Each structure stands twice: as C-alpha cells, then as structure tokens.
Length: 207
Image (cartoon, rainbow, N blue to C red):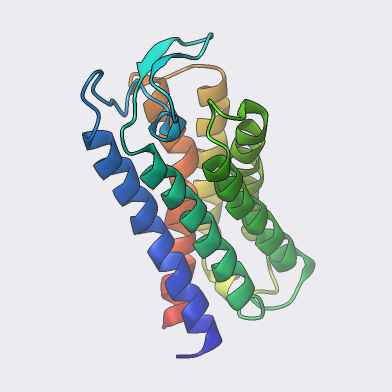
C-alpha cells in the first residue's frame, strides 16, 4: 500500500471511530440519559458526575468517559496521520499547504479535547474546541480556493458547502441558537462536516 493510500485510510478510519464513540458511549448513560439535542459532545468525556455548565446547566454522568477521551485522541491522531501521509498528494500551491495546516490544527484540537476533558481543564479543552470549530472548518473554505491542486479543484463545491455549514453551525452553537435541533444538535452541525470532507478526499485519493 502506497503512503498516500495509507494516509487516505487513516482519514477513512477517523470518521467511523468518532461517530461510533458518540453513539455507543452515549448509550451507557443512565441517569440522566444522553441526548444529542441537549448534551454537548464534550459531556461524553467529563470524568465526574454532577451538574455542569453555568450558561446551560445540565446533569452529566458519563460512565465510559475514558473510552470517549481515548477515541477523541485517536481521532486526532488519525486525522494528523492523514495530513502527513497525503502531504504531497494534494498537489502544489499555498492554498493546499494552508488547508493541510488548518486540518492539522483541527486534528490537534481533538487531541487536546480528549487529553483535557472539560471538567478537568476547561481552558485547554476550549482551546481544542476552537481549533476544531474555526480552523478545521476554515480549512475547507480555503480548499475551495485551491486552484493548483487537481484533487481539491475537483471538490470545490463540496469544500465550499461543508466549510460554510461547519462555520455556520459553529456561530449558531456558540450563540446558543438551535434552530429546533437543540444546542447539542447544532454542535454536531459544526463538527461533522470535517469528517465528511476528509472522507471524500480520502476516497478520491484511494482511487
């Protein structure tokens, strides 16, 4: 397997790992039940049980928080590996390099968020979230401008759409505007576009 294909497979593993962690670890909650509408993704990684968050108070108790935090760190490592191993595959140009650096920043955000749960070190956890929300989503918008990369040029409409969705979801999530899907649901709108994008790039590279 070539190094580019190995990087593509790293990206293809990141998305299902993160999604599976969100689904299965939430099922372990009993009192209270986990809700994608009400709860933040970070709630799955909180190490203690109790009332959490002064702006939007909610009961949090995640029995499998170690698994969630491990999954977040692993997700970040896989995303970073994908960036490094596909470095030359995206082609030349400042835009392509910028995309890779911003995606790498987003990957670092997942490592930070998993290594420092919100109720252990809120500042470092928040820094990780900012890297994911703004830099990773911004990277997709930059990808839409990459004219010297054959791979990214062919994906311009998808990159533009996902970048706008991710940044729009970020703005609404931080403003606590849920549009009927809950604040937790809006956080998923901010986070999931990156995984769709990296998976789409990976499929193209793997071909």
